[in-house]
Image (cartoon, rainbow, N blue to C red; front, side, top):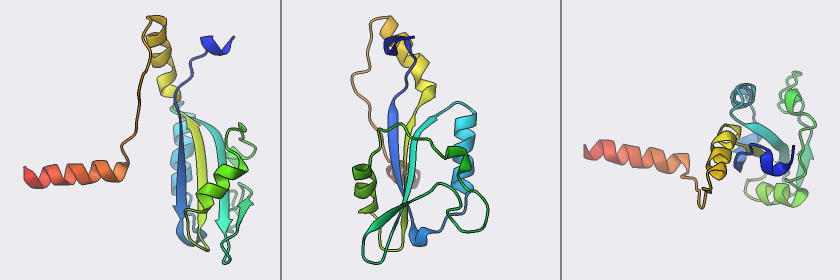
Length: 147
């Protein structure tokens, strides 16, 4: 199967700050659920902790919170090569000392068949974008207050 015949969805990334490098695992359970249901495919998932001197160190996707349980063992070795050390460094620069950052690169697999169907009929996606969740919530709150 060639790349042109594959159903490939758009690829997005998230950089998430964990203040104090505290992880509860709740978000990771939701991530596993999205993967299990075929909504997304994780291409890369890397985590770094920023030290007191502002340097960062990549950490293994295992027992991130030190409780003895493997938090992200399901994603160990998931690495497409699209997310590199420079990307991790840029994300680490966005968080404070003592904090952790997780960088997730994922394919929206749900959209692959839709985009392929559009292309087969001669159409093409010419623009896409994202509205951050906090902006959506603020707009909805504003509309609710007006109405």
